Length: 67
Image (cartoon, rainbow, N blue to C red; front, side):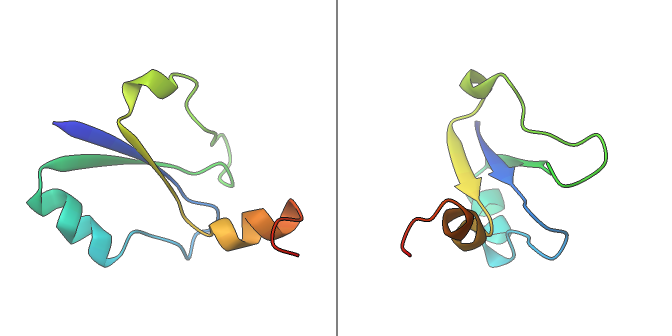
């Protein structure tokens, strides 16, 4: 079974309908919530087969990408 790391930048973000697609294809997903108290991004990136960044538009804007 494949595992995807999902980085959630705010409480309002979630996978939504993508969750159903992942579950239907036996793809497990694990949320990382760096905004939460004690939250962070796992150090062992080799444990995941994919990465989804939620709210990446805000992140890219903060980095000056697309400005």
